[in-house]
Image (cartoon, rainbow, N blue to C red):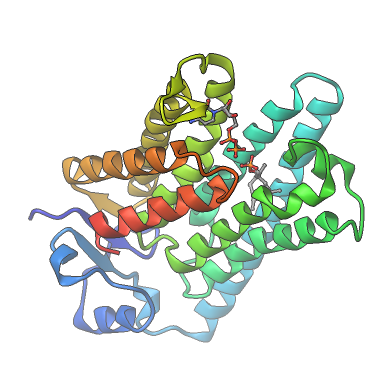
Length: 297
Ligand SMILES: C/C(=C\COP(=O)(O)O)CCC[C@H](C)CCC[C@H](C)CCCC(C)C
Ligand SMILES: Nc1ccn([C@@H]2O[C@H](COP(=O)(O)OP(=O)(O)O)[C@@H](O)[C@H]2O)c(=O)n1
């Protein structure tokens, strides 16, 4: 069967798709348009068909535990890079970019530890939501957290938290709730925002002597790094979800489309729009729209 992806809602191998489970899913998750249905087939694990009190309570316990674990991981990540910066082991800009790359990708990689219930995505979105609140509180200087400010801002000003970092966590919330594990769109969009855009800065600052003709602030080295690393991280994340049994892919069909999404996102990031639109908005937005176009939703 020529299909692009079979997307299962659980870590188990896809259960047989039945008309009742398909009807259930249509009422709960977006399904691909008919054009793409031969490439993307959604299935559902058994517990969805007759959710019981036991299944529900087990899922809530699992999701609450997963949320606590990932929130702790977020605090630990920022603290580790704050410590490395304070001890001058790495410079602040590199620290910020490594936090930029690792935060979102580790968050994306944590989604499989949440349950297969329909509420799991909302539990997962609590992690960036809590960090969103943290950024707003410290960005408005209602409280002080020097470690946070030093780890995720360019110039160490608290108000910077209300720009790039805030847009970043809002995108994480959006992708977790809207796309979750059902769609490659969220996975690819986060791979491009976190991996691609993050590496562009690191490589561009170091090897970016050859500038882009239409944007002297950005370099071919940065953009090429973004395209390649964003593409590889996207494919890697899709493979990760394949190995865990969430999706099955026709790899040639998929890789062509991932490469196209990566190209479009890289081109958008290279445009001289830094002053008007933050990359943490333009890159994921371009990735989502392109991925929806080529993957169907
Ligand atoms: C540095 C960040 C954004 C700035 O982007 P840019 O201005 O350089 O373009 C990232 C901010 C990260 C945020 C403070 C913490 C987010 C944590 C995440 C939701 C969960 C991570 C969990 C994982 C297990 C570490
Ligand atoms: N495509 C790119 C992106 C960034 N860069 C380098 O990285 C620096 C920061 O890029 P940026 O303004 O996009 O940074 P963020 O908005 O991603 O934090 C730029 O001033 C360039 O030196 C590059 O050379 N080529």
